[in-house]
Image (tube, rainbow, N blue to C red; front, side, top):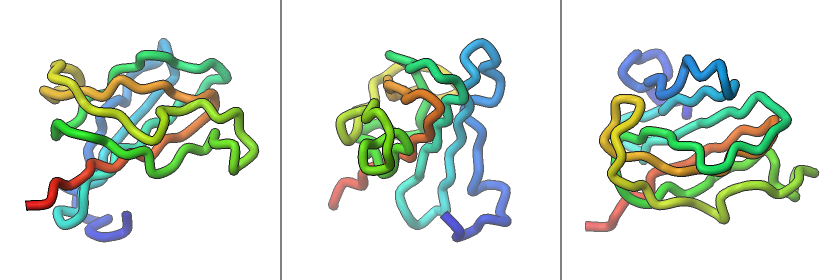
Length: 115
């Protein structure tokens, strides 16, 4: 997450204006590794079926969930990851449908397909 941190192109807001749900999200992409999607739910309510636009289709692996039981949380999450679907939202042609844990942060990483 530190590579190219001073390069504006390595950061993109995905959601910066969802005041109704108090959710925000951004993508970090250093151009070498798989992009990482960070999604924050700033309320004590679980957000089910929350659509988040992503720049690439495929499987997005849940790298980190601040609400995981290992961290003393309730264990609300996405079962390790989700497949994106063709759905235009947030300026992207693909979307992940996520369960956002209460007062939680998720890090999801686009799985690279071996060539």
